[in-house]
Length: 396
Ligand SMILES: *[C@@H]1O[C@H](CO)[C@@H](O)[C@H](O)[C@H]1NC(C)=O
Ligand SMILES: *[C@@H]1O[C@H](CO)[C@@H](O)[C@H](O)[C@H]1NC(C)=O
Image (cartoon, rainbow, N blue to C red; front, side, top):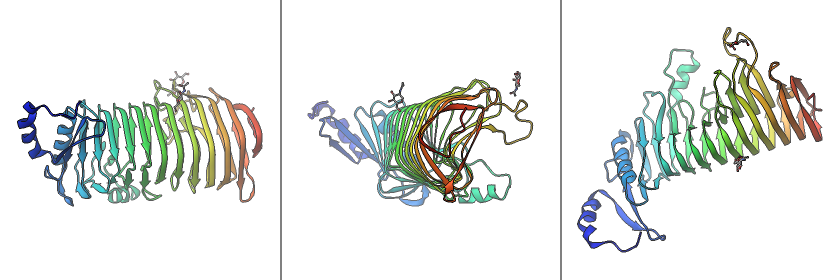
């Protein structure tokens, strides 16, 4: 679009300007419009419900004929469960740097902040405060509690950037990417206490082309969990712990389930985590699979199970009549994995006896337990080892 504004549009633009805080021209020459949530009635006091102002800024930005920005000034804003849905006419940027969005203290279910059916959205900066502490206390006391909400869910969407976001004390999962294509998550920080239940950092499912880089994740469940139907996933430069590590799974709960393929997990430091790199499946029949996974350059600082494939997952008696997983795991490489294990078995391949793991590759693995060489355990797993591998490979 040209810089020149057609004069016949002027009366309309002046009217619009009552609601719109400012109109700026970008260097690209197209007009970008900014919708300030405070001008639309949001209160930066952390306790007045500002949902309507956010939703109205979103609908205007989404309907905008040019790239538009939802601008959230510094301060703290209470939001109820909100859904920002597409389709939008143009790229929308959520500028929340310096602002904190606060969840209501009565717990929701599903998700608190949802983006659905959007294409071309950037979420820049900001802090999401899920206010989960009360709910975790209820859960940890074993009472009947609501499930709680995921803090941020992106669903059925494409071309998304989440950059520099902090998510703290989510009631349930912090960030969920579900049925999406081409999502970049960079420089994100997740913080929740090590004993907060089900507070996974980032969960990816049914999505292709997701990249997660430069994240620091401290939480009570998986730092990153990878669900069915995930492909072409790239994870790089992650600090994880406390937490349960990076997990492909749980998979294979259902018979008809999509597989997981082409996953790279690179340059991760695990500190005091329950697991390092894990693949976990239910011991039930399933058509699911995991293939083409590379775990590379990981440092373990006292991870309880640094390398683990667990195909025997079955939390309740009777759920798994056949005690065997149908999920076929193949072509998984562990390269340059070093550090200390908090349990003696640092490498544990507990695969399905009906669908053994195949082509597991160990390439330069060096794991210790209490300053001694740790041990390895293999069930129904075959593959090969190259370079220095400590503990010695037990792969068939
Ligand atoms: C695997 O995923 C990466 C992104 O993580 C992508 O660049 C690459 O092309 C994918 N490979 C295949 C064979 O699809
Ligand atoms: C148990 O195995 C039988 C025979 O292979 C299969 O038909 C059935 O679906 C399995 N059940 C479960 C719950 O895995």
